Length: 402
Image 1: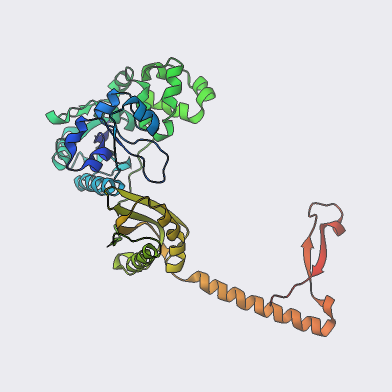
Image 2: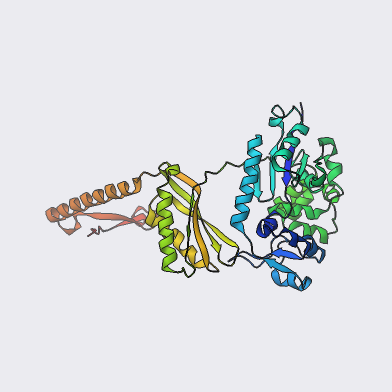
């Protein structure tokens, strides 16, 4: 029985390339993605010349500019990144892969289920992926997600080669690698710096530590890092392909305030009228904008309760329009997640509750007319845990609703 092999498809600096588009030649200069509007002032992906000055992703803008005086900030393009990366994932799924992807630029899938489709071995699967994506993608295969990612970092895409690490080689392959690679997992972003301060430079040094000591010092993140260093990882969780339902409207240059709200209202009406909705409610939506001066903006709003009521959804989305940092040339609205079928059960329950309260009020009114004001009282809990029954509750007047 063959061991499970995880394939990693890696595009280094994907978000930066998506923001540059046709200006890819600028990668030879010190570049960094500017912070997204309304987010913490941290730079995004950086070019190789910027890394040479010590600028890394997640560094504060002021520190990055002080380390590299020639650093240029590129406006981020989250809409473009989503569109381009979605196309890459669609090509992988066309090959037959069940893909997991937490961020743009890196995707993972298990190769075992594809052997029968592509020649009966791992090499055939990698060749099929290479034909679907071209030579720019770096491919790595290993028994775990983290090891496959490390293998892809060492692949040479221009030569059409993929790095394959078998199960017996995994621990030896990971041992000399730096602990800074643990930053590829968001939950371990701060751990490598602490490990380096303690004198742990490589994954092999980390793997030699006893699990009990690591758990006592670092908790669950430390145990996860220990598993990664030893060649183990959590199971993949393949994504569920989205159902693209979106609308976009071009805006006049001076659109703001009430105009944006009216545009949002029109977008929502068009979205709810789409046949792809099939009568379902909406659980989460994304509001996006393309700026006149370049760049894009995107924010996701999750509703507290799935709904198809335009007024309720508009109340949740409208405050996000204030976050727009620059004049927009177009505004878009996209469904991120659907809810259950949109039956207006809540209004029905409200009507039935109102009718019940009306009947109860009429009964109380008739009882008081027949036996006086004290004929209808309500029980008010005062001290439910008391041993004396008289202290647990008392009678209070029943207040009729108007």
